[in-house]
Image (tube, rainbow, N blue to C red; front, side):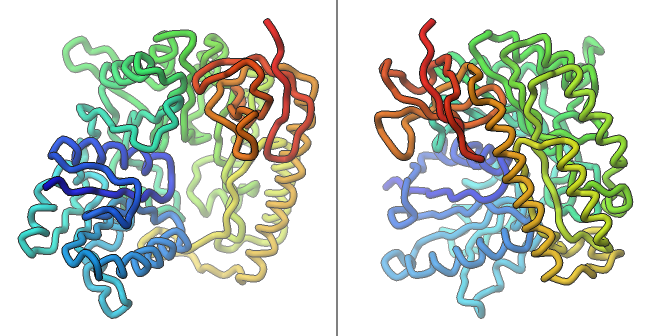
Length: 448
């Protein structure tokens, strides 16, 4: 009898990509996917450890799922990903918290899932959290089980060696290693043949992508890979995430400028506007270095949208440091931002060497000021688009009305407009922007 597996994913785009790899591995072994946890025989939570709040969500969800064991005593509950790597066997010992976990599998161990499931069926606890310096899953074709059929992720590299003091990723994802370029290009070609019209190249730091062909000696950089993927077809849009400011090269920006199907949207995490804080974070750039990269983007790619990540209340952050973050936001004029309070993570360099000394109330107040300012900046950015025309890739119907469609422009902004031409997901449409909010552009289809 076929067993059903349900996968619930938390955290970054890389985790969603990994869940597609997991789905591919398990379906090859005659397991089938389920859309609901209640219908599944096996439930996997693919987890994130970047913040304490992210882990707490998973703990709460694990407790919620325990009641399903009443009707299915043989239900298998597994934790995958970064929490599995960080907490390891301690996840199997949480019964006193009203939580039982049967499997703990790190992000480099997904090939072993079929055997680990057999181990659980035989009454054993299953753990595999060994980090690899080579695993990229390059030969596995992901199952796009949660896709909209238009956009897809391609993981081009794994791991990180930047060792920002606040970050657990180097400890949960291991060393940087890149996929063979041919495997990436072939996966992109296959997606385009299957009707996908947008792909996002993923890595913890995509700018660090490097592949050396042992036979020919040819070296591939990230700009070279981007160009090769862009040349597959002009109708295939290319995005990428995430870039580290210290590695954002003019060469990459010039490649983007040369190819209209590489999207005009760059996510460039700043984290702070204070050089003092950036030094404590071990970000390896100053505020001036960051602004140099912003000026390069504005010069080479006029009209490019820039988004960022910002952390409020890092160790030792003064009020002056916070004001410098606000001033950086004003100076850059970010189109969008992911904004968080600093959350100390066990095992990181910051937890070992720096005092988490900014009071929680101060963190919350600073974060709210950052959020309020970003809402203003996002609205201002969108208001500047009113009256302009954009090519929009349609992703589906609007959430509020089936008579309207929703998609994104090259700048990664959501655009909603009337579906008066029977548009389908994957179609391109020229749209004139007529109104906006801080989150969405409203428009009308333009003939021709």
